[in-house]
Image (tube, rainbow over all chains, first blue to last red; front, top):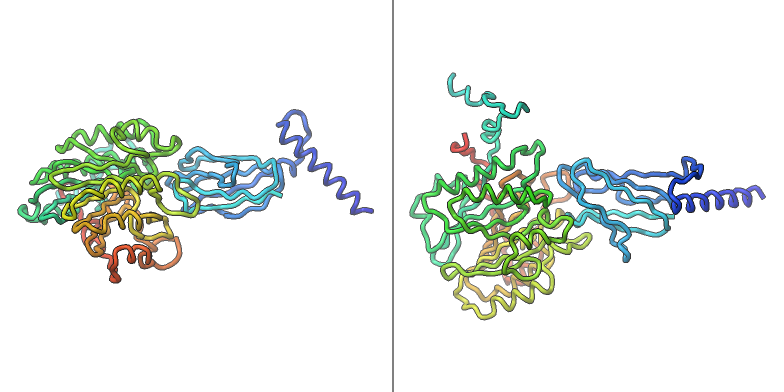
Length: 119
Length: 322
């Protein structure tokens, strides 16, 4: 019974989180979990961590810490995200509003690859 | 100790603590390019830093030109905060050659971030060189954000596709290829179907005795695929050049000089005019340097593959910069 209540609450929280993402930040009382954010560092021609599993609604931010410009471009069928070229210390953010697996790479240095799994 | 004074910071016009003259002196690899001379249908390539060691008669031939590469105009990090200065140093060396080269090849990464002002600066500096014609191919840094539109507008006149073309000079057939477009995740440089088809057609009617010079940004041989230093479909391109007695391939991208001979094909990479990169496998990326792809050997029909590392190109401090 406890579990059932917990699942219901979780579902409600996720639903609110989803609506909040769609609606933007217009008056919804978002708690910390709903505004989840994750960081990926670009260092030495690699994405760290290379694979990340996140919850729907998470905002991911990539920061280029190399002396060389990089990009962050998804390679899924619909090309979900594509950054402009990021020079040193520049950032790119994207909020994942749908579950799925999103492989990506640096279109300048294609050996650099990474993956975001959104649950 | 009057000599030592030269190494002190005498001119700090920008008030940034960087003595550009001293700085240039320290950078052994600064201002490097390659002087190429075609002799009896075979191309010889010399680092511009070594030119003072070469006898003038050795520099004479049917045709000579200069290859420069990887100017990365706009780059301003500690490895080289003055890439304009080092490009100018390369131009000075070109202008100091006893045998004036007929033209220049720039094998890409003209700019660092594809900004118009970066291209403008390079063009302005290269205007100071004695050879007036410059033939360009793009590096991946020249086609950022716009799929190469700007590059084509500036340099693509008369070219095909993403900017590939060929031309003749004194009986030598030059082919400029583009292998920095539509790169695939996990892959290497790519020429693509359209360009390969064009290449096959371009060389079909040439005599076997025609010397061929191919230039492209990313190496057309597997220098170090782990770092992306190779081209996926170069084997097919080289296959079309099999019939020719003299083929020279000139590349940039890896910011260091390397040479390799395979049968009738000689591969050269030019140093950067901007900053050096580590030797394959000598930096954080793991793993030993691998022997070049089997694919390449099969195309050329040879089994013996040797790397010949440039002996001097990265090691000479050029007194003319001091």
